[in-house]
Amino acid sequence: MIPTETQHLTAGAADLARAAALLGEGRLVAFPTETVYGLGADARNGRAVAAIYEAKGRPSFNPLIVHVADAETARGYVGWNDAAQRLAEAFWPGPLTLVLPLKPGHGISGLVTAGLDTLAIRVPAHPTARALLRAFGGPVAAPSANPSGRISPTTAAHVLAGLSGRIAAVVDDGPCPVGLESTIVGLAGTPALLRPGGTATEDIEAVLGQRLSRPEAGDAISAPGQLLSHYAPAERVRLNAKAPRDDELFLGFGAMVCDLNLSPTGDLAEAAANLFGHLHALDAQGKPIAVAPIPDHGLGAAINDRLRRAAAPRD
Image (cartoon, rainbow, N blue to C red; front, top):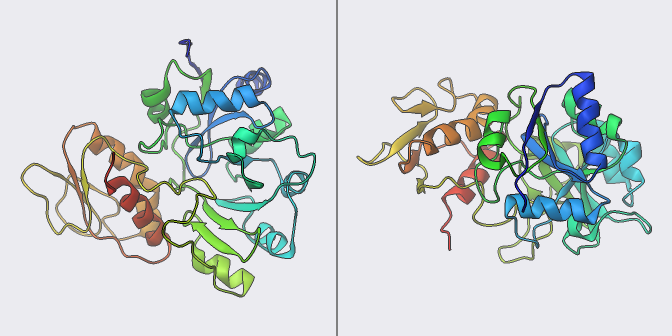
């Protein structure tokens, strides 16, 4: 990869027009969503999508999420069904990704889907993301804007720390309000929870009127974020710790003494918003991280999913 000077853009109209122009040139632009900062490229441009994999060092078998401005645009790329319509009406724009069969003549690069015949697609809620998508006028493939397998970025500073010189620009509009990736639901067959995230699984099941199936261990990767070791700090992570060991930093939850606290009041939404930012801050200190127990319901299930992947053994 040839080093490039990464432009630090604002959310103003002129800078968003510049960001859209860069995307149109096949360049990489990081931008805020309500979940995390995404690393965007024109999803129809194979060279641009390949540059995402190169910049992130991302395994080519791990598919990407495509972001579009609205549900009508999404229906132009994927086969729509009743379940998709109900979930889109309930949760879009927002932190929910739907995996649906690709339509014939879709025009999406095969690198986006990693060779699958389905597409992960969503309509983000962040006003800057939506303004950029409207300005660009096309589908944007955008995984989290960080080196593959590392902590997801929730500020422009996080993006620049990991990718400065490797991407064309970052659009800075402050911290991401949700701070946790989107929930991914597979709708190509029996509705399935492929990744917990910023939309509570219970709420999705209530809209569908049925329980989502769960992939079995060892199933083939069918959506982003399913790698076992993912979202990982450089140092070891130990979960469900009551207290830190002498060499560890302590990430707390609830009322306790710790180095950083996801939510002193035990609020899972606050904990989700703080998760990656706090992991970044602790990881910068170069010590192993112990994490207090997190309730495993609602957003807690998604937080624990990210933490288990962060703590998984690595090659």
